[in-house]
Image (tube, rainbow, N blue to C red):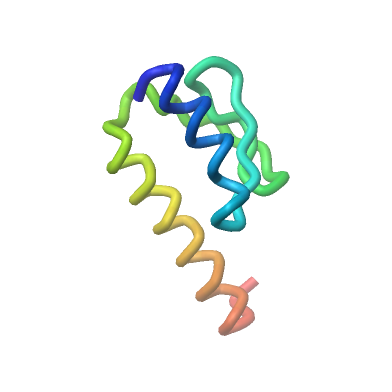
Amino acid sequence: MTQAQVDRLCEIAPKYGLQLKHQGTIITEINGAPTSFDASTYMPDQFIDLLARMIATKMKADLWQWQ
């Protein structure tokens, strides 16, 4: 992903229930949890799929109270 794509992703993410923070192309926070994902190593669709899998895993854990 490019810097412009990361900027746009962080702008639109709240529309889908995500709060993303970044420094350059590095995603530094997802919904308040610190992280370090270099989005420049992903194609945009790949990174969105990764975010979706992370959300799905969290939702499953919350549903089944695995945490």
